[in-house]
Every structure is written in structure tokens, then in C-alpha cells.
Amino acid sequence: MNESLISALFVFVLASFAGFEVINKVPPTLHTPLMSGSNAISGISVIGALIVAGSDVNPNISVILGLISVVCATINVVGGFLVTDRMLQMFKKKEA
Image (cartoon, rainbow, N blue to C red; front, side, top):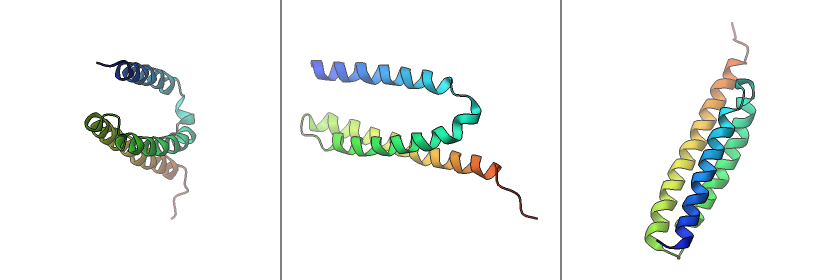
């Protein structure tokens, strides 16, 4: 394995761990505003994943990892919008 792949996996594992720890510490009252910010960040992740998928460094690995990244980020964006919409529906007045 080359050094760039090992360093990329190391960064991925650290980012995953840090993200998990940060999300666990958020109180429920802040979830809706943070979901909106998270959706924006995930949208940026989709663009980054598309760039990785088109990379010429190692076409097979780049395309596979880019595709996985696009799918995961898209699921995150769509799920985030659905959860945010559902939470905002709870605060609307019910019409009689």
C-alpha cells in the first residue's frame, strides 16, 4: 500500500471518530439548526466526492470511492432535509 492511501485512511478514521463524538454531545434542542448546517456541508461533500471520482491518480479506486462517497453524502443530504422538515412540522400550528 502506498503512503497516500494509508494517510487518507488515517484521516478518514480520525474524521469519523471526531464527527461521532461531536454529534453525540449535541442536545436535542439544537438538532434542527445543526441539521441545516450539516445539509450544507454534505452538499459540499457531494461536490468533493464528484471531484474524487473524476481523479486520474488511480482510476479504479477513485471511481469506486467517489461513487461510495456520492451515495453516502446524498443519503445524508436527503435524510437531513426529511428530518429537518419533520421537526419543523411539529412546531407549526394545526389548522382546525
